[in-house]
Image 1: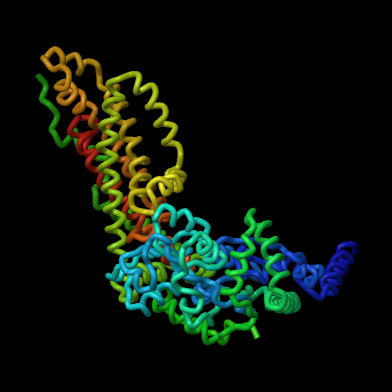
Image 2: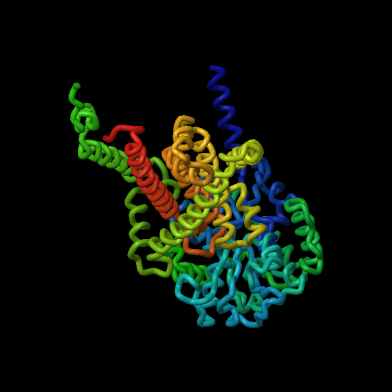
Length: 314
Length: 278
């Protein structure tokens, strides 16, 4: 009798909280392209909109580790680059794309004493990317083939190495890399140390009109908790609007959050420059994503292009 | 005078199964593992394919690596060759270095007392822990990988050589001296040959250490044709089948070389009369 009462009250409470899930596990990186997440978490707007659903945040340093956590079922919603997102989708992970987060926001920087002035000077040089198969690696391979250059494994002269963005300063100092295609704010930070930007965000690909971060959701979570997901998307859209409308306040908020997560604050001028090369948008550019998936195949990191009509959550 | 037992009687005990029977059992075991794997993935679908891929998916990755035509395909043999070249270079350097240091340690007590115990300590540190240090000193390149491989594998060689020299029966030493050997001659013609069987087991341990250290180093230092790089690419592109395929290949190569060294070792031990032939 008591048990049935308990059960009934449990059922009632779960039915009354319109949000559904008890926790929403959110993953993102302390990167500029994930600024909407930084701002939404930092200002508490995600938690406010989610109500009784507790927001559980986890930060990652690369799409690889985030994608692994996602595959293991430890994340419900995440900010991630299109590379790992498309890879995850084409491997059959239960993933859907909710919204865009940022476009562009990656630059090609040459080491100051390397003598590299143009992309075609990269022949015989070593170029660093955050990790093999990630968004920057794939755009670098495309950039190289557009400049008629080939990588070493394909009989050309360019060596691509993976170096975590935080270690590229040290890699440049030790002359272990001659150039790097890095996401912001690392590009602006390297530039502030006198390393020239030889390919800005527009030359990297598609005139700068390409996604560099998306919001993804676990399909099963989205089906079970549509209310939570739409509340999240609304805050994400608002946060993106805030980034565009009040850049000064948003930069301060982002910097405070970066300091909390990484232990160090960015020089405001570096952040400003990085900001000017990143475009925050919640729109999903399906054509760009399709082209990206084709580049992924061109680079040899995937064999199929996933079905985008099923991937985008309406 | 009693007749000596026939050679075959001594060497072939009737209880030992013939070689083909052993091979048959091994083959059956392999088939059983494959069957369990197939049932768990393709039939029961205990895990989604992006967590635990089926044997077929893993074979597909291996076949792409062997004879695929895509931009990242057909690199498997080159990766294996690159990794083998690195490990053999590092291993040979480690054998020379470890042999030399082991010799010195075996001959000179102060060195054995100091360096010997430090080496035992260093040996207990997993090779992967040295990789960041090696990158700082040598850069993100092959030298850093070789450094880790040599560091990991020269220690078992050094310890085995010094230990084996100490374990040479004193009678052999005395006999050698009585017959006129001394100094270098005693070392090269009496002590080292007598120590050989024990040195060999050190060489085999050193091989497995070298192979493990190599894969660990290659995982962190990409940009070269290597199995570690394949593992990293598989991980980055959510391609678990490629990861599993690479793990299998790493295990297979490690096992093959270990088997080869074991064969040499047991042949030499048999020649020394330390074990009977099978």
